[in-house]
Amino acid sequence: MVNNMTDLTAHDAAPAWQTRDHLDDPVIGELRNRFGPDAFTVQPTRTGVPVVWGEA
Picture 1: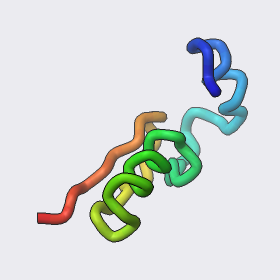
Picture 2 (picture 1 turned 135 degrees about the vertical axis):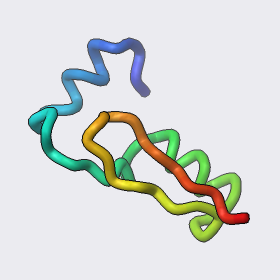
Picture 3 (picture 1 turned 60 degrees about the vertical axis):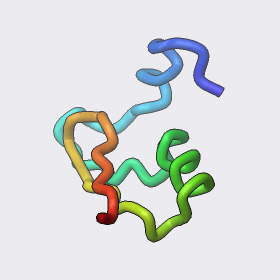
Picture 4 (picture 1 turned 135 degrees about the horizontal axis):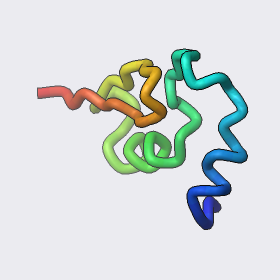
């Protein structure tokens, strides 16, 4: 469990410019558990913030 922002930055050792898919992000895991793996698409980003597109 992440307790604060320091834990988040210590966990992210990849360079800021590197694109990440965020599939290991806890928020993505929660969404998949609740809505199923086909309910949305995760967009790889360089922002450090997961981007999720929902199915209509």
